[in-house]
Image (cartoon, rainbow, N blue to C red; front, side, top):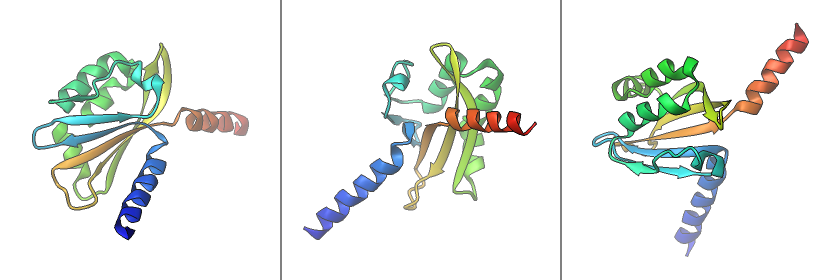
Length: 146
């Protein structure tokens, strides 16, 4: 019974931590398959595949229609499999801020890629966090300071 409580508590903690993310991808880097977990309807309306066999190719294709044109090149370079895995070597996480288009309106998001913490070298987790309000607040504060 105690083990079940520990599992339930672990799941509740993971759910609470993940609630800030609009999307989380669980990617198998051996065969590039993936599954996505979404937390908002707004992200669902973008028409992004929730599972598939080639995460990196699908992400590059989606970038051309969903990422702000000025941020596409940086995103495509960052999401390249070899580049991303090299960026993760020796580090716990890799992060990239960029603008994603929602109904024609750019919003700042942050991609955070991490290796699994339990020694699982086959999978990575990629979370997409909406940081638009934070970026807007920082920009407003800078204007006030100037």
